[in-house]
Amino acid sequence: MLVWMFRCLFLVTIVAVLILNLSVEEIAGEEGRRNFYVILMSGIVLAVLAFLVDVFTPKKSLAALAGVFFGLLVGMFFGWGLAQVVDLINEIYRLQLSLISLQAIKWMTGICICFLTVSVVMRTKDDVRFVVPYVQFTKQTKGARPLILDTSVIIDGRISDLCQSKMFDAPLVVPRFVLSELQLIADSADKLKRNRGRRGLDILNQMQMNPVIDVTIDETASIPEVEAVKGVDQKLVLFTKSCNGRLATTDYNLSKVAQVREVDVVNINDLANALKVAALPGETMELKIIKPGEEAEQGIGYLDDGTMVVVEGARNKINQEVVISVTSSLQTSAGKMIFGKFEGFVQDRSRAGRQASDRRPAGISTSQSDKT
Image 1 (spheres, rainbow, N blue to C red):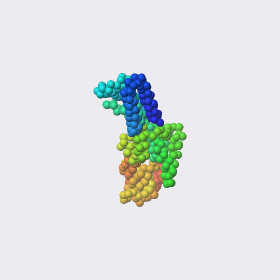
Image 2: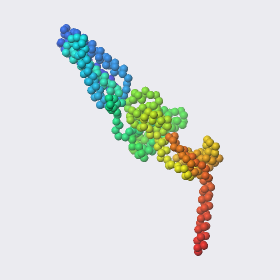
Image 3: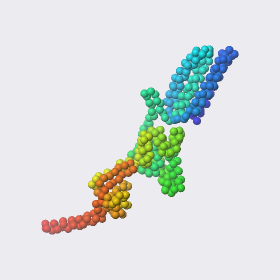
Image 4: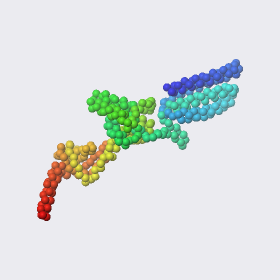
């Protein structure tokens, strides 16, 4: 809308300059008929050319008031240069145009050039990047860089607890297309997907009502580069890059793609794994064997935090509480795995402990009677 208002202002200005110059007696009279047609044709051609270049130029994105002033400065500079070209053409081809005609052409040329430069800047207003030889002005974000949330991290829900604990003080931003995808999942015919989508909407609503968490739904005008991409993941990467933010996700593949595109990623799974207690080789722990492993004699169990434990020699001990000793651990972005070997049953250890406690008082009483 703003661009079309500016285009209308340009047309009104160019028509006003034409009428003002063509109404001069020296040009409007019979003697200045040649100058009259030259000014009229040059004004129409320049205006139509500038308007067509503006309309058919591919849209980009970039909005800063400083950019408009930059466009005006560039337009005035090129307008001054083209004014010298107009004088040179008049002298070389001996057109014998009057001073008023030359001034009118120069004015219209300057207006058209300024219009084109400012229009390009206005339609590239989301980039804020001008490349000058040896100098590059880039967009600077004030305050903490925002966290852009994707669908998976909202449904996961741990981001709410992390913000509640004030681990993240950055503002949270949910793009409009992420909210649309969340609503689409909530309306799915699949019961599991529908429950996940509704859970995500409930978590997002709770975060908005929490005074500690600063979360906003991005309802600004769509960025052309983002809207041109079809996939939600690609839109997230471009949107995060355009607003100089960080992408919060639990999607392993999305985090890798974002890293390739040089976008900072906060993977909640990586953060959760980093906060888990380290399991050192030789330590013992108790767990329940849930299922057999892939290799022979292997059993699989899980700790309370969801860490998978692979136990050697526990394939035939499913649904039993066992004691294992840690042999090694493996840390990846997909999660943490602990490897150990079977040492005994929890029941045997507890029984041995009770027997030792039963013997200990008898020994103490015997020793006391001997002393007596």
